[in-house]
Image (cartoon, rainbow, N blue to C red; front, side):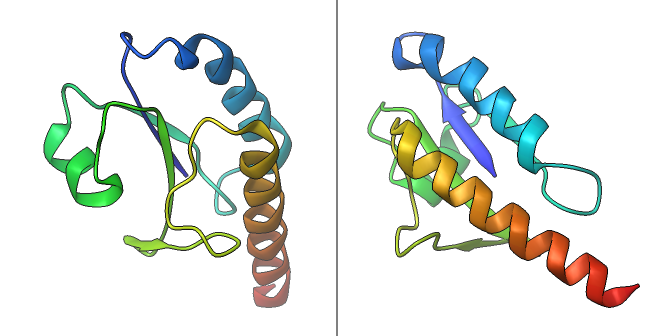
Length: 101
């Protein structure tokens, strides 16, 4: 899951620690990776994956391709929706990892 952010959109101040807590709760090697991408430095990617409008966005990828989470391809700075997405993706990834073993 990638967080496209900028320092001039002040929602990042609140969302950064929340995103980090989701990574701690639902992420892990081989399960689910959380990353932050500074959109001003990665404008092409931000435009490609989230139609960058300057607002903080969260995007999920599987095997290098963007995937929808609970029907949405991009989640804004909405903690409830983001937590639901992380919980779903983390659970699915852990289940698949367990099935492989």
